[in-house]
Length: 174
Length: 108
Image (cartoon, rainbow over all chains, first blue to last red; front, side, top):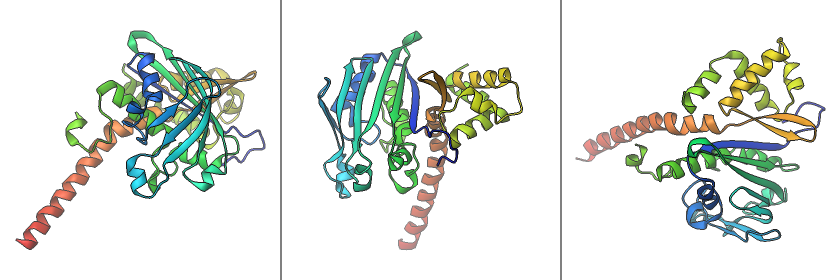
C-alpha cells in the first residue's frame, strides 16, 4: 500500500481508554475465561514468562466452519503484569497467513486518572501484508472480523458493561 | 466533554480529516512529513495534531529519534459499534419482521 520510497512503516498502533483497573485488563487479555467473551472469542493458553509459549485457540463457531483448533501461536518475550506484555504472534489457522511468519505484539497498560486505564497495542507487522490487512479490518466484509479495532472496542464494552457486543441479544444494547 | 464529543469535534474540521486521510494512506509519519502535505505553518499542523491526539484518533510512538504519528481507528470503531450498529440493526430487524409478516400471510 506504500507508494513512497521512504521506509515503509508496517507497525500498527491501537489505543483505547477503559474504565477498569490495569489488573482487570491484564486478566481479560491473558485469562481464557475472559478471552472467550470478546473479539474472536477463542480461549488462550499463556505461559507468562520469557520464553513461555502462547497459543490462541479458534472459537467453537470457527471450528464449526472447518477451522483447525489452533488460531495463533507465539512466544512470550516479556511479561510484567499488569503493565506490559511482549510476545511473538503468528496466525496458523490459514496457510497464507502462516507463511508470513512471526510478528511482534506489545500490550502496554497504564493507570490513568479517575479509574480509567490506557491500553496501547503495538503490532509490528514487517513482512506480513496479509496480516496487516486482516488486523486493520480490511477483510471484515469477508467475515474475517474487524481486526484489532473491533477486538479492543468489544473488550472495552465487556469490561465496562459486563456484556460483549455480539451476544445477539437486543436486550443487551441498553 | 466526553470521549465521543472529542471525536466528533476533531472530525468536524477538514484539515484534521485530511491529516487522518494522510495517515490512512501511509501510517507512522513524522510532523515534518505531514507538514509538507499542507499549506500551513508547522505550529498550525501541531495544533491540529494535538486535537486529534486528545480525541485518541492519533497516537504517537517514538521510534529511535523520531516521533511518529499513527492513525488510531478504535474511537471511530467505538462510535460505529455503539451508534451506527444500533440503528442499522433496527432497520434490519424491521425488514426481517416485515418479511416474516408477509410470508406468514402467504402461508396462513
